[in-house]
Length: 55
Figure 1: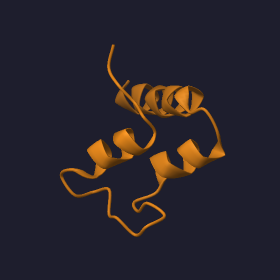
Figure 2: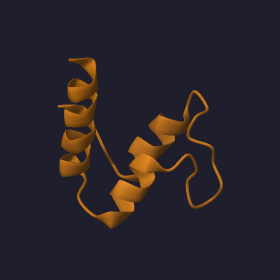
Figure 3: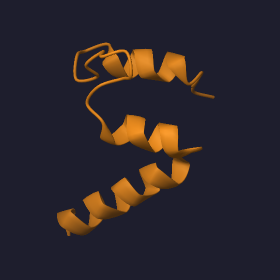
């Protein structure tokens, strides 16, 4: 069921967070500096901030 998949995805996302600050970043629409992460490059800026990279 789609609802269950969405709930599982949300829980898995939280499990990947390395701390409270990352959890807050995932559930927030804005970064501490006021940047709206709903803009097209917002998630990219957030990934750069946390030094994320795909391996």
